[in-house]
Length: 299
Image 1 (cartoon, rainbow, N blue to C red):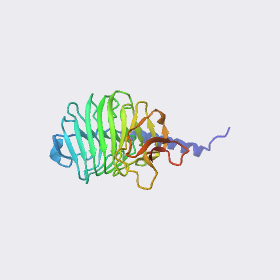
Image 2: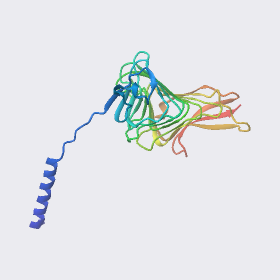
Image 3: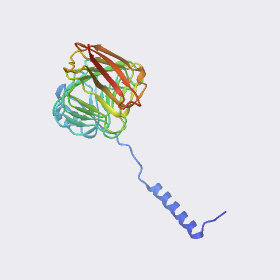
Image 4: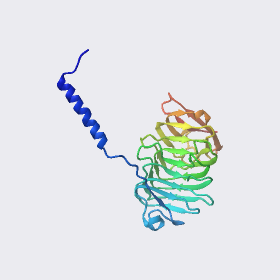
């Protein structure tokens, strides 16, 4: 058995002592609670400091909380980045309106629900830019996705840009309802190249309402999209018009890298386009582009 030279033994011993000393004298790591900033107003603009507790718009390592029944928040201008935000209350619930001019980046989650039993939340986005899960967490845009309570939430997106993961409904099967409506073809919705993706959970419904040109797709083509038993997908194609001289159209609804349990997703076309028939088709690997598509054919 080989032995170390005495000088090497002394060197190793010195290194071990130095490491031990550094560990003993290292500054202890302490956890810092984020600031919780509560919405004080009933109806008003996000960027108005008077509507927030302490007279300050949430920013940085802060959580924005809108939990007052009947609160109506308008986001139509750039606001500071923040850690996370949550909207929802019991009773009459809360309303969030996001429109042209809005710009917000959230490190963690942007929740259209609050962690209390039977909370109600509604959000409508017609314009602006929202990026969620910027910090690379698995969180993102959560619609009725509480892990601890039954909640009721609905969000409609008809314009603007949403970048980041989306979870619709609770993963724990606590009941309640969650609905995400993609209306028309003017929005842009995609992942943020982080760990987040799209999940349609139990009691979660994803609905597409086409305009005459089609509908905005959810582009998660670099991610695995997950469906949980009880999830639903609904399509209203009544306003869609098949272009002249075109016998059929393949309209993307969800683009995925691959699927997890897509077979449990309950899918239906609730309203057919005039003069045509539409059916939902799931394409899985090794298809060139996995996803869910609406195939429309003229009669």
